[in-house]
Length: 125
Image (cartoon, rainbow, N blue to C red; front, side, top):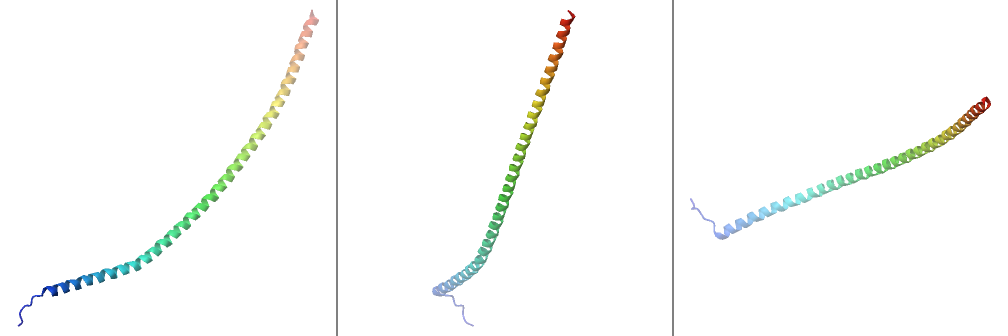
């Protein structure tokens, strides 16, 4: 049986260098795999970002359409309110004129009644 041979310093150095080289190759292979995976992930992220931007643009366009419609509705409501105010003003003016005519006619009747009472009083004396 042969005796136990202890490894020399240079053998130990060579073994360590081979182990380090094997670890380095393993890390490089993992990095290459990660690069391939990262390209796929980056493509997926870009696709998601594009979808997100599309949805945001759609929402923005819908919001602009909705705001334009609301603005038109407000303008129409304001026009209807102004028209109603004009109609009410015309109606009030007409009623005021009629009331003034009635008041004037009533005043004339009162004056006539007062003059008649005055004339009747004078006639009794």
